[in-house]
Image (tube, rainbow, N blue to C red):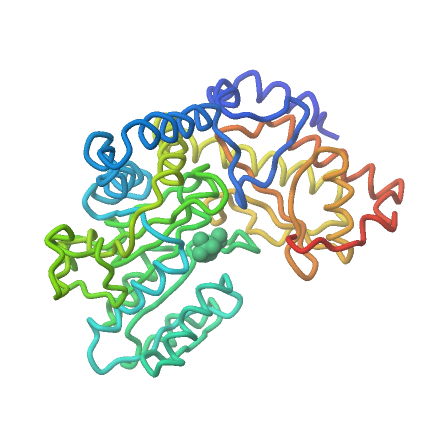
Length: 408
Ligand SMILES: *Cc1c(COP(=O)(O)O)cnc(C)c1O
């Protein structure tokens, strides 16, 4: 038997990213393995928000749109996200939620593929991705088609306008081969939209290397932007001229302060802005993004793989009764591991009571996420050893652990 506790200590000592944990407000005794749902609070965020509120808003008032560069914030933060996903600075803008950005980009793709209506995705994709297709179908603009992972390429026929996939699956952690599927879609005359919500800041993403057309991503997971942080949208440069999206709000106008009666879209991704950007949330997101780009995506990916590999191996040895449904090879999965158990909900609650935070995904998945900027190997070992203890002692059977809260 490997001494996993000693191995965790050794890995933490050798970890070049260990010093970044102090950049987050996390209790020392907290094993936070849910940064893939809500990233931790950067230590610099409260002061930044305080400054935006007291100085920029309180004192600068409306002049801060110019003097504090509020008006450029969506593009500025977008440009900072670009190197994390293999995009050019002018190909990304921060705006709205992932769901709303999906609506804009699915619509844009459909308008570029005259005569084709099918949006192809997979069953079990993150619900909002499927629901946004449904909304467009309800308006007669799209037709939803679902194909299992191994049947996606076969389902790409002449009717498919857009392939919409989530790069890293939220439940299983399985990662698609972005380059291969993008090429398959293009070969069939379709465009591709990647949802990077579980990818950005944790796994290698090369949108331009893969030839991707569109992408969206989440600000409050590995980017640590805070609850409900705005998302981002990517449009490949070659599509900037033909871009057309239906949420034609005034902030996406070429000259919003001309107050013209007629909509004229701004060039490039600026057109994806709809209403006034939420400056407080975007400022918080900028702090989180700065932290991630400061560490660098290569170092983040390397540690993410080490963390998940350590946990997979330790779990397999210590708790073989909890099968891992994520791929074995670190290159084929995101920064998470998912384990199946009939009482996954109760196990998760019992873990939380011991200050090990993972999460539960219905009906039977216990999910552990490894945000590489602040998770320690010791946290991973604690998850394994506490789980073993909770199972062996039967503690998970306490009635209080079976009560379901509104958010799981
Ligand atoms: C978290 C997540 C979202 C979030 O969408 P919002 O509209 O920002 O709530 C979307 N897609 C995927 C795949 C996600 O994991």
